Length: 192
Image (tube, rainbow, N blue to C red; front, top):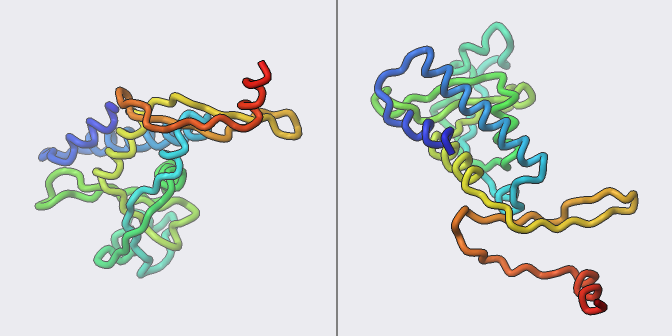
C-alpha cells in the first residue's frame, strides 16, 4: 500500500533528482518482486492472478539492444507508435524484475512521472513495454488490499497437497462468493 501511495505522489512531483529516480526504481522493483513472491507462495487470489494488466507495446526500429546501446533505448524502439496490450500478473512482474532496459516517462510538460519503460533480457529484441503509473498503483494497491478468506487444496497421486482454489476480497468487503463444497467433502459431512 505504501508503495502505491508513493508512486501516486510521483505523478505530480515537480522536482526530480537522481535520488528520486533511485527511490522510484527501488519501489517498483521491490514491489514487483514482492507481488511475484506472494503469487508463487499461493497468497494471491485466483481472481487477481487471472486478471490482466494494461500496457503499451513499442516495436523495435533500430539495432537490437545490447550492452553498448541499451542506454539509448529511445532510438531503438518506435515510441511514436505503440499498441495497447495486456499482460498477466506474472509477466508484468517479470518484465520489471528482469529488466534489461529501464527508463522513466515524464508526464505532461516534463513534470511528474507518467510511467516506466521496461523490457526484460528475453523480450528486449522483440518489444519495449510502457507501464503506466496508474496501472502500477492499481496493481500494488490491489495486492495490498486483498484478504484471502478461502483456500481449497487436494492431495495429488504422489501425496503432495496442491492448491485448487484461492478466493480473496478487498479488506472490509462482504464475502460475495458462494463457496461450493466439493462432492467428496459434502458426502463426508453427510456421513458424520
